[in-house]
Image (tube, rainbow, N blue to C red; front, side, top):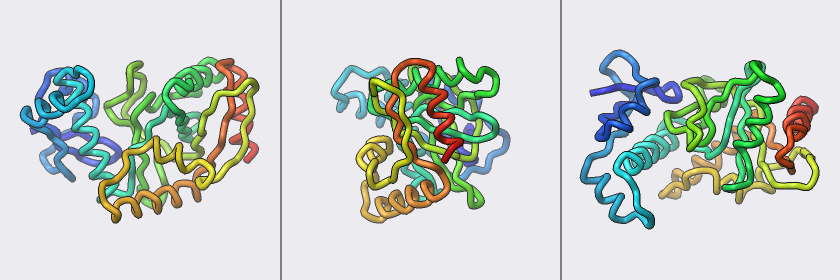
Length: 235
């Protein structure tokens, strides 16, 4: 039995594949008590592979199932949700950048690292969680960090969420969840029940009471990072 600390929760995961076990290793913690079990089985992995529209390796299937188990449990019981984004911390505050696939969210956060250097710490480049902990919303890393595998085991108080869109010039404007709802929903794992859908909507309401929501039209240039930074500081 192995226990991992993910998003300030103790999660039991009995890894089936060696690759998943190695991915989880930096999150390993001591003790035997845990908040919930997110493990899968070899049979569930095989079933996932058979139903997949594209050929899938066993460890990728296990990763997908375990992350889904965590995400659904966090929404159901622990005031949080999965939020597909690239996220970083600068000066003690967390920033999330979500976008449709291929828009360039990883390129954008790379520009933040180029511009601000050691002030920036990458939290997770693809699959973080948001959680409400002791009255504050945090961006929380998970072991699943996308193709780049950039990130570390940390959480950071969430200061802003950027919705990235391609533009011919760099422009950032404060926006509202109502205007961005479709993209916000596409960034998360939609609940199966009406009860949990209400929890998700209430969670977003709380998140964007604390955190700024900014629509960012950007180019791939480093200037886009400065425009985003100036926008969040000016809000």
